[in-house]
Amino acid sequence: MLTYLEARDKIRSMIKQLPTERIPLTQASNRILAHPIFADRDYPPFHRAAMDGIAICIDDWNNGIREFRIRTTIFAGMETPITIATGECYKIMTGAACPVPADTIIRKEDLTFTPNGTALILGESISRGQHLAQRGEDLKKNELAVTVPQVCDISLIGTLAALGTHQAPVYRMPTVGIVTTGNEVVDIDQQPEHFQIRNSNQYLLRALCEQWQLPIRSCQHVSDEPKALSAALKQATQQQLILINGGVSAGDADHVPQILRELGVEVLFHKVSIKPGKPILVGCLPEGKIIFALPGNPLSCFMTFKLFVEEYLHGCLGFTNERFQTSTLMIPRCKKSSLDEFFPVFRHAGEYGYTWKPHHGSGDITATVGCDGIGWHVHNKHVIAENDSIPVLSLHPFFNII
Image 1 (tube, rainbow, N blue to C red):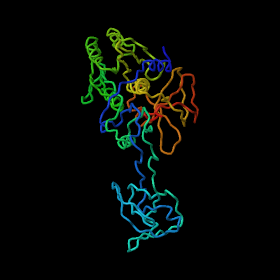
Image 2: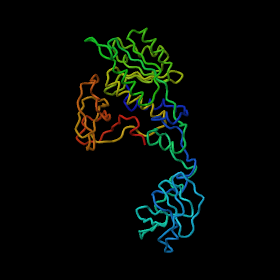
Image 3: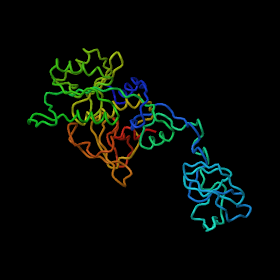
Image 4: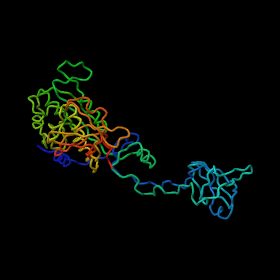
């Protein structure tokens, strides 16, 4: 049986960079930018007033002039061919292009405007170029503006728009087929019998896929009957990424591993020495499609998606940083097993680290409610002392991306 790190390395060996596509910027939110973006011109593209006031030549000030005649007023979006002579100024608004020869802005608060159309400077300390953003000070034309890979979050969307990237080059996410299994499982809009459970994992997997902007092309539930299960899995393999839930353990009704082999799936590994999630199976088809068969208990399903499916996606999108980050566990934790254990951790306002709380095993439907990450209790450490450092994986798929 593989250790967690061995299984993770197997996942990494399957990684292939995804193809790219160009989509309207209005559709790019939370997609992954695939190509670097270069400045199409200087930014700002002109000397830009950063304050309302007047624009003067600093040489006039240095020569003792304190009262300036207003030649014209310049608003943002206006181009003026009018030049100023000695002792003249422009009245200028924030965001406006400041024409030469003016090179310094005096803010409105430091001026008195007279009835005869002049502006009297009140201050005694002025420096060349004050309150004036210089052309190209943010970016020069053809300079690298945005590196990749990057999440198209709200801040990046605004930057891309400013750079004129109306068609964003992003990675094309793989299509997904989801199959949940189990005779005991009913849909969430049904009233289950006392021996049945609701199909929470289908909705969990949907939500996890949507967080990654994965297009779900098929989603079905099937009983544990081998013929029906085989037909459902065969249909799911029409997609590029196949997620199966349940039927991978060692019970008499756990037919998924055998059926996958019959469908031509090469099993990369089945069972990993972790808790929860030990029965996980990962395989691939000859054409490169990836299959993740996740255990049926809710916590196991959640953990194995975060640990293995997201590891695969993370690499396919070009990210190379380690996803687990070192943090502090504020309360002690003990374990008896020699497995790598993964558990929900919680962060509270004002605290520097994480806490955890006991749950009732991998079937506990509330174990992850309100949690902020996944703590890793490594296999060879039985006791995590108070305020010990541990690896923590953020629940947000891109939180740890650098």
